[in-house]
Image (tube, rainbow, N blue to C red; front, side, top):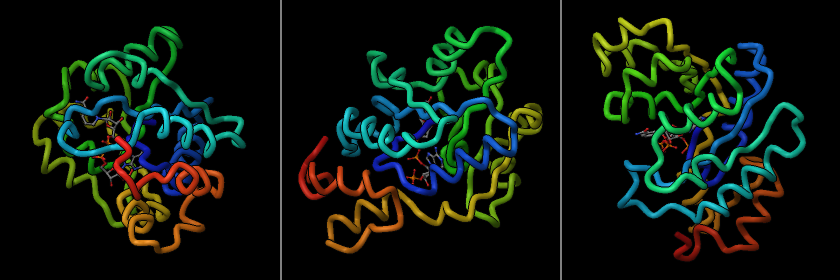
Length: 199
Ligand code: NAP
């Protein structure tokens, strides 16, 4: 499961658990991005903070794990490298699913080695209800129709929660309780994330 996780919230956790149940996954590995190429001009929190928050959030679920793969790899973070790293760890016979937000996948044609990437894993596009795969079809055109088997849609009502909204809430002193695990909320407060320049 790839994402910036700045911060991780219940939308992500519900998505991971729903994907696990729906696709009978043995494990969901959260992979916080290192340096996302499309966010070079956007301030994101320190990688270690995002990794620690993700670790705190996933601690109690025995099927969840967290990987430092993207954070430790030098240079910009490309999903093709993430999948290659995971393939090396789990071997040629493992079926890999890359779970992420459906909106992020709308841009997949701009990702490094997109065609090869789509041949290397399946994609689970997480969205709130009402989203349709036709949006992906519209954005990706023939690429999508040809690789249709690789894309799955997962509707998650809890994705009404968003990291952007949580950051804005912290900045403006509004409550974040019940949007994310308490431990993550404490981590944000204790480390003064989103109220100071933290990148
Ligand atoms: P983003 O553009 O920040 O997010 C787009 C939307 O998807 C947001 O609404 C976001 O909500 C949601 N989202 C992101 N991750 C999610 C997840 N795991 N589960 C459910 N919703 C999710 O996306 P991003 O976080 O930067 O990138 C997502 C993944 O795509 C990362 O693993 C990244 O490395 C990969 N990616 C790869 C390339 C490339 O290879 N060139 C380029 C772009 C992205 P929240 O903000 O609430 O999470």
